[in-house]
Amino acid sequence: MLNDSAMSRGDGNEQDSKESVALKWTPEPKATPSCRFLQIELELNAHLRGLSFGEPVRYLYNPLEYAWDTHRCYVEKYCQAGQRYLFLGMNPGPFGMAQTGVPFGEVKSVVNWLKITGAVGRPDNEHPKRRISGLACTQSEVSGARFWGLFRKLCGEPAAFFRHCFVHNLCPLIFMSSAGKNLTPPELNAREREELLRLCDIALCQAVEALGVSMVIGVGRVAEQRARRALATAGMDVRVEGIMHPSPRNPLANKGWESVARAKLAELGILSLFSNNTWPESSHTQETS
Image (cartoon, rainbow, N blue to C red; front, side, top):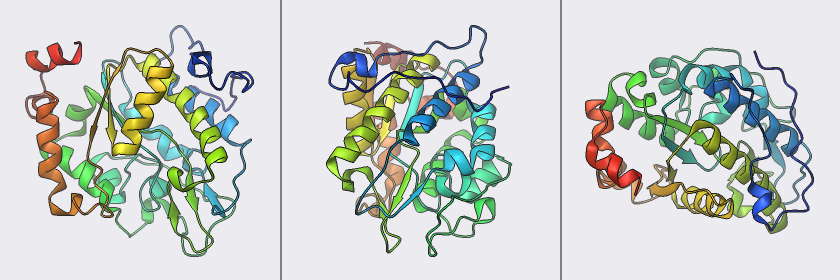
């Protein structure tokens, strides 16, 4: 079992070099993929605690702390060997992972389809309009409902999806203004944003290496671009692609995100993974090219 200790990654003097995102962590020799993944997240958490944020950020939530129980359930249940495709979001939504500890974690999908259980606590400083009620949250997050809803239709059972794929967020933190507005990393102070994402980039590269991922699929352009930058800077030969973000803030997503996502998965040569649960020869060839 994991403990909550985190290992040091060294100081930040190598920020602009490849070494700043090089792997400085050695997993336990017989650690499972889920154990390695959780160790990386614990280490990231330790570093994120040392950051501070000014305006426009007034409230900061980290579900990898107060929702660690459900998050660990998700990772231990679904993070496994052979997951060569990593779907990568940017950071949690207020009614998704903020409530459940699961990426794109719309409550009904998390409880009814993914069958995640566990206790969810509360952040130390809650916005009065953005309370955490955990798996009892009654408000649906559209992005998560669309994302997991698509794969539920394609796969039927979660095991069929997680046989080859895993889902993760680059940054685990949620940022809010004084009014309770959800702030994305691009809206943060530039210096604070770059220090935050530097740490998240390191953790992403560690996770990709530890899990043996060969393709990262950014959900949204920001996640795609950041993953491409992080992996290229680290000198890692991992293919990076992207699909449209399912957010209702995106007008195009509101006109039929599911059909756009299906078409993109087909273009990438991996749609048949979800319908047939087998490796399509064509996608395997593309993926290693």
